[in-house]
Length: 495
Image (tube, rainbow, N blue to C red):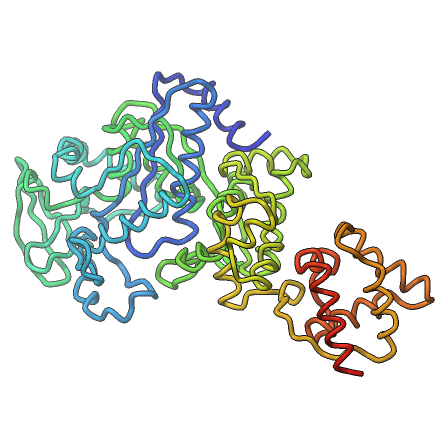
């Protein structure tokens, strides 16, 4: 059984809700990467599976636009003006591209576009700055200040760090002078008046709680929003769930400060790109490139076929990605019996393609005409689904040798000419690609020759190199008569 079915069934035994509220949140602090996909795909899949079992679910996504810009992503270092906004809340940071009101909202739109491409549907989308401005956190701030010693005890016990004796850091005010909220510290809180100091610019002053120019400490923000949103289920990367992580704090806040049971959590493994962990600051795993070459259903299938807490390593090697495409098609054709792979295929959208991605790479290099290719394979849907990815592979020269079939005819070894001519005479249009391929073995062995010698000679004649695609399949795609014409032209030239 797949991880998602196991999880949802265990969920039903742990909690009985009329509507299961599944939440997910992330900081819109830069370009999306594969880790971003996990943050939306995993909870959406859980929500979708809950519904498949006849129960109600509500999937809510929260953009943490109140978090401060703590670093400039590698892809944006050319925007020097962003340095002036370091430490400010994302909803107040300049959008370097000039198309949105802020940095935070620019990259929120990028996440929403990503969801659309992946067919991930949210029932509700919220932003932290709006939640704060509407006053949803006000009573939680008051509660935490009124029980400062208890909150302090929870934070120290769950994070394994000692707080300063005069600590009152329930909230992080936005400095009235420099606009930062990462370097401010509360010095007192009385009757909704917040007095604070900013270590960045030296400003000292106060503000009214109702001005909403502040945010809760993250370890207090998370359980607070879970409480007022009525969240039943929420998860995150394994780093949040390590001993002493923010999930430990959240659960204890629910129990000891709110007097309630916390949501049911889940944790998922890291997504690695070529063995390296994703990072916005380092620019690893940018989806802008990945999504050019890999169909969204393949991306979802790759992420969902692993166990929930297992790390996923996507190797951006053309051969590896081609095996993913091929595996996806084999699963859709019923050639794999692994229940996890089958369930991942179903959850990815269950797309069926009559022609493999590798075959389309070959067709496109030969004909460069999608209308013609659609007629040849008798499947317009497969072509429409995959053609943009095929074009990117060819344009960016991501073709392994066996798929690089741009014809470059040249003279084969003289010792193989007679065998090539005999092969040409022995095949016809009515034969299958397997029959054509096997004919090479049959002829070569019948003449006491090594089949690899004949394969190499034919590849040299077609591509000027000793290796190439699976020969029978290529000849069928090219057309037997076209293949014969090329052979005859090359050999005629040699004579």
